[in-house]
Image (cartoon, rainbow, N blue to C red; front, side, top):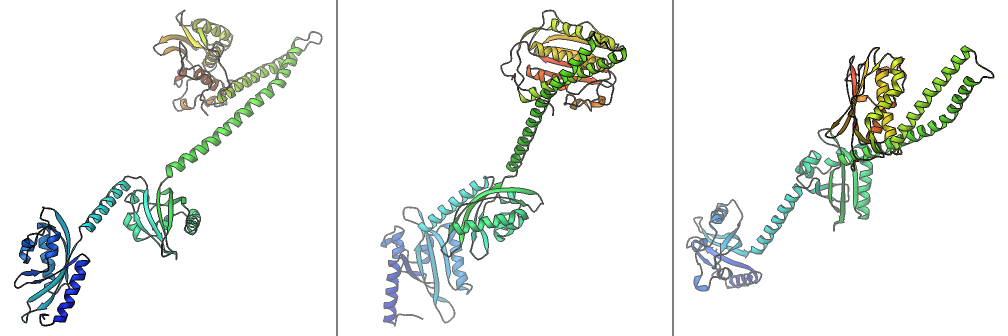
Length: 520
């Protein structure tokens, strides 16, 4: 129906058109039968065209629409003409006179039809939405950048909203959610309580209480709890979240959390190590104190035993003399064990000081062999001649090195077989000097080698008649380490063992001389 015969209607239409143009919206009308358009002068001015360049037909206007947008624009109108849409709407790019593109939002509706059902009059609006589109594109670009950044963050970035009435939901969850929780971001946003249900029972109550306190006081919330993932794996989670009150009374949290299982395990390991170190320190202090306390009465026992042996005014009978000798021998063995125990505690506590210097090795070895000849003779073991270059020297503490050699050769004798041999040889190497003690004794099985040298561990000899405490080799290894050396062992069960001591020929500035790590 036309408004040509209705001046009042035309005046109202003119008024509305003027109001819309003033608001930045152009009003146009189009006759599909003649293809004529009216009311697009302001749009032409917007695109930089003068009045003489005005496009007065839809066909001409289509030439300004971006080729990628033209077909969709036409399809939207046809759908409206077929009655599928109450009106048609589309946003497209239109070319300006200087060749740039501006975004136009077009909306229209057929308001008049012919008697045979053809559209006669279409009215609509055009709005320049370029700034809005640019703002949207910038927002999308920023969101894409943030999403890409969040994808490389090891934890989960999120927004969580609570309406204040018990219902909560995740508004945003970064893509790393699946790697951390075993749930996709869409699953978490679809079911806001999914994460809460995964929290272990003993942590659920405190976690919810802390969350409620944060919502009430609007203070940052730091959480640390354990949850069970859908795959059944228990993991620790640690994070922080900052609340913000919204106009409707709800609370929006901006937060981040990450898997902190390894951190918790490390802390637990450190606590365990600290407790073990404290227990070991207490053990060392106890052994050191007890060793000192035992020395005094033991020296008195051995002293009185010697007095009984040498007392000519009241001589002992042969049977009594034999018994006193056994007392003295047992006391001497106990004193030796106490001395080794003291050395062990000093080494473990780092309180054993050494006086290292250049030592003539052949002379020290010969002295040790001379001291052990009686023991070897009693055991029917032959000590072979020392094999060492006369000028060979090492950098060590002479007293402690003598203790090391005596201990190794003494063991080679004790754990040997009748008519067996003990061979000692020393030679220069590129990394220092190697001293080897080689015996033809009972040997050590491969399964027992890793535990060799553990304090008080005598392997298979704890029930044998061979005397020993299981401390000597631990002390020996510790002394060698304090002298910047090392001890290696090779053994074949039933054939014998080779103990190799490696020592430097000069001071080693990178080595410590006050502590050593021993097997525990």
